[in-house]
Image (cartoon, rainbow, N blue to C red):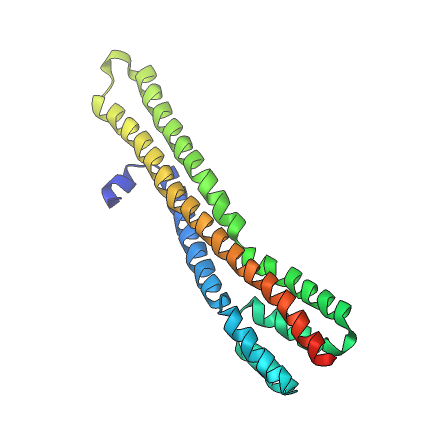
Length: 204
């Protein structure tokens, strides 16, 4: 959107721009976090299994510490409680999962909120623009300045367009991030089931 159009959008346009900046920052930060959190869990677990079969627990923990993401932290929790029995291992993995999922979902509600309120902000700006037009008509009557009236209409349309322009990518970004989070959570569930078997078999 050109700077001249932004200047004609009235005060509400700046609220929409702030919402757009926040949405962009949240999306980039969350996308990077999801990228760092997602690993090849099958390859990672195979490496941990190989090390655990050799009885090298310290190396297995070191692998977990060196690997980013929630899957590695779940596996580490299972390894640390391996001597407490299968039920306790499962509980520790579940507790770790309850800690990791909120981290993955952090700020997603903010992005969803912006996607919902951006069109409303646009509608708010539209209403203000038309209020200015009708106020001018009421004051000037037949002597109303057509340029002022067209400016009010333009302000209304710019705000409406800006609100929609922010809402569409924000909503798409939210859905994309939710799909990434769901995929990571699925990897966590698979890894949790497998690591419980790995460490309990090792302890037998």
